[in-house]
Length: 350
Image (cartoon, rainbow, N blue to C red; front, side, top):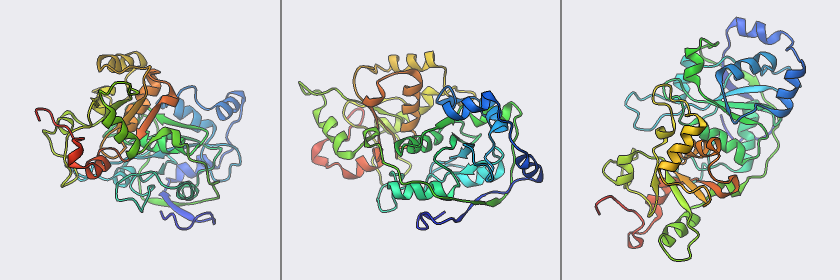
């Protein structure tokens, strides 16, 4: 998908449906009282269960002929650049997906002029991406991850939609459970979808932490009178301590002064890879010493799994939303921009 064809009706690549999917999509969707409230209020929680999404898709399918608000499943599968099986998001999307799902490419809906991966696109580029995906502003979007990983990159895609003010966005918790519960799936190559205009939104900069802001926090660490902003780092323990290499060649590992290491899989069920229940999420943050009264910045390698922590914080009710941010550039930007003389890369034992 290209972000250059901004708002003219275009055709974007999406999965090719089986014939049965075309048949079901051609039938008028039932629109009862429950459907009305689903469309107007969205789901009751930011995290959506497989059963809830399946029921919503029956009532409000993402058909192009519908003029009513629809429920759109959006696959945001993504794998680390050093994935041992060399998998890609589009590959697993073709192999198995929710019927009528669309694919959000985390490596393409970005700021293409930035030297750092996964930086937020401009509002104009974001609107173009939504337009080419055939997503309307009044659609309810439910983002999900690959069955293999459970939860990893979907929170980043969902957070991106939230930053640009999409009214109704949720995360499926999760596709692995969807498959295990025998809910509908499909596979195959891409098909085309008619796309329309998506208004250029305003970016909510209050949700985003810049390098300059994080640097100020790190320099103020342990200083008297400092605001006491907490930096949560979602990377693995080895990368955080500096004992393991970063997946991107030439990048130093380690951590920011005062950062708290909470590997993103800590907030996931070890078996299903779905988010833990709220009470268990609260316990994770309590045990890590996170103070809900103080501001929080979530970070990781490139701003992807930082959004897993941000989602867990939201689900657990830890920290006021207006006091939580995600460091967009995260460690990849940090390790390339800090000066050695600043001593802002810490390693355990050094």
